Image 1: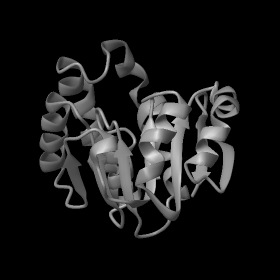
Image 2 (image 1 turned 90 degrees about the vertical axis):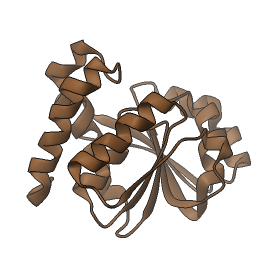
Image 3 (image 1 turned 180 degrees about the vertical axis):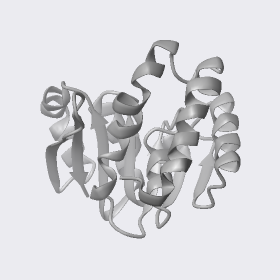
Length: 191
């Protein structure tokens, strides 16, 4: 999955397991399941991202999935959108440590960003109706929102379909990507 970039993602995992815990970006109980529940959970979706895309990761937090995608796919131009200073400082430090030149950190709320992207993603940020209101304005026409959700994805979609269509959705699909014991469920909203 990471090919020649495996050492870089291993270094990222090490940072998450140490500084990420110390700085409150991930819980200490998440360290034993860091790979399957967080890194691979994020990575299995990246083949859905077209070659050379501009990507926005809304509410990036510890860099999931944005940094994982940027590591796996140097062809992507990834923008991590995060409102909290302590998280943006962490993200900037990780980007420098890993030597990533395809990532930008923007300290802002999604609704204050006025750029558009080919792909917008978010993981564990908000219920789908609220997430749609934040993210759909960032999706260029013909682009896609890839909302990484849990098992309740279909229920969230049922409650938010009308809102997503009002925001410009032309197609909405729930897709599950196999990932061992923890499959990744994604709501794919095309604009």
